[in-house]
Image (cartoon, rainbow, N blue to C red; front, side, top):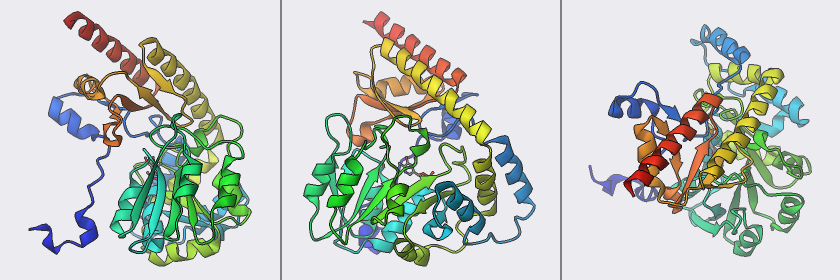
Length: 370
Ligand SMILES: Cc1ncc(COP(=O)(O)O)c(C=O)c1O
């Protein structure tokens, strides 16, 4: 079938290429074990309490889920000290981004975001017939907030800020966000994608949730995919004023969030001891991996997420292929036109050791060829 029958906007979309599935690499290369450090998943997985809650929920699989996710919204409301009516739950943060696009972007509307960043902002803008306005990150790979402000026109509808940014791990600091939001004109909605917020360890970070509480025109996006280790069951949420969430509720499919995911998310929030321990382990591994990569001559940008953004000082594609043959997947940043950079998810102690050893072996092999 030709593309003639397709909706015009769909013709210009390129399907998102996620980290290569572990199953494909196993099959293609005949490997028993594959370590994926390419998709910013949490290799420790969900808390045992969440696992138990999910298996318990399986027996009710024949029942449609409770569509408003009230219990989860109430629990999140207590956590953030906001009313449950200011929260919407969806089938992952990506689904929230889709709902925002469906609800707000008219054909011809301009949508501003910095580049490189999470590709869904571009895709949903194009799908809705909007115009992506891409502002390069500054030289420190941070969002160029002045650049965004200067790009605002009468056609601007949305601004996306990925905070921490994927793939760089950088954040908007201190009072910069407040001053930025104060300069955004009426009629423009700011979307703060905080998929990695739980990993932030610096002082001076302000979450969009604070600004929602103060009545700013902001939608803050969060997910259970990363910190809570629930990427496979698909659940995320947004916090905003009721008025900004109303059109999202209007376009959302009624039963898009399943029972298993709701049960897992509710229980995952409770297991504070597990979450704290996991975070400490991640910080230790992040520091250790950073030092090891630096020793190998790579430049590691200070990331506030569960991944490192690394300048490998050579075309990453060669390294990527050599690592893949050894059963390790990292994420080359070439789709963002950063040919020498890669994004590496921080794995477990053993996974990181495998990566470090594999990189050392590859460096040795390359030296002996020279
Ligand atoms: C910045 C950012 N936003 C949203 C998502 C989507 O998350 P989810 O798994 O909740 O759809 C990701 C996933 O990698 C991400 O990096």
